[in-house]
Amino acid sequence: MCFSFSPAFTFLLSYHTYSLLLFSVPAKQTKNNLRKITQKHDIYILNIRTKLGCGEGGCGACTVTISRMEQGTLIHRGVNACLAPLCSVDSCHVTTVEGIGTQSNPHPVQERISSCHGSQCGYCTPGIVMALYSKLQSNPTPTVSDIEETFDGNLCRCTGYRPILDAAKTFAIDVETAVKAPKNIVPTSNNETGNQKIDVITTTVSKLQHTSTTNGDPTLLPGPPTLPLECIALAKEPLTITNGDITWHRPSTLNSLLELKTKYPDAKLITGNTEVGIETRFKNLHYSHLIHTIGVEELCSITNDVDGTIHVGGAVTLAQLEHYLIHLFENVEQGKKNLFLNVV
Image 1 (tube, one colour):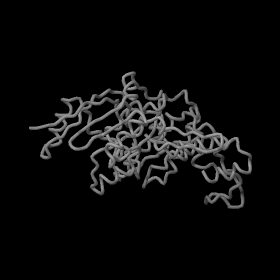
Image 2 (tube, rainbow, N blue to C red):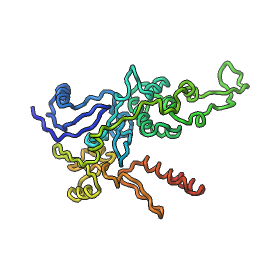
Image 3 (cartoon, rainbow, N blue to C red):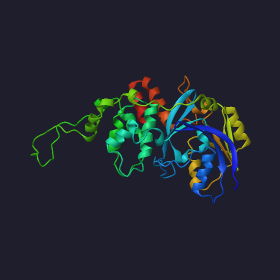
Image 4 (cartoon, one colour):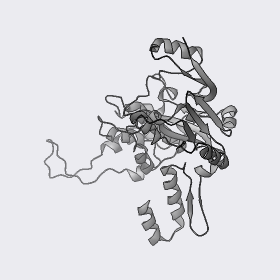
């Protein structure tokens, strides 16, 4: 039996540290043998609750939380695991749905989704739980508007989303002002004449009232994932991993990235892997060198000059850009502000 190993890299998976060796296994090996091999070398596989859905970053069933140091700050971000290369989580803390709660001691996110009947077939539920969990780690005091943006990348074919949003809105800080019961609605019940007008409480408001004891209170949420000093130090270092005929590069400076691109002009730049991940999985394209840009500070930042010119790094996410622009336009005069916000 022949196995080839590459240098190790380190990451956390649901609060457990792993030093991982990339390896190739003969195609005829069974899953049981693979499990024994990986356990022997301290490799975690067969995560049974995080689901693989579309495989192209469209359904959100595989959402996990990635915690990493970016420009000196610990950032928590929900990502599609199906598009996240294993090498990209070096020096990161990967939190899956197994890592936030159990059946006997569920996380508040899991408990709320259950109590609000936000799960039917259950296939999408782990991803939805982790999308909301990721939001609360990055913003423990979200507004209703923030909550509604949380599930843009998650699909659910069963619930119609209402019970999911009901559960999620219980964590919002502005529920009382943002979600109101409608007034003076003509009842349609057979027990009413139809002439009398009464107050009607929507499903959302009713469920918020039942869970109001902890609404919008971040102190009642478990603390966010942390990173050991080892991972914080590793995040600042360049990384090169070769397995077979593919090499993964993570430069730590802009100059080193440019040198790599000069040396390997056909190398692909990777940030969210939404392009290369699709090309390699479905189009069977092959790239010998992949350059991860997350370690280059200039590509992860947004700056603006005195003349109003905005410089956006190539590794900046769309959500980061949107929030930056909204904050920037807060000081613009009202007429222009509305125009700019509509563009955003």
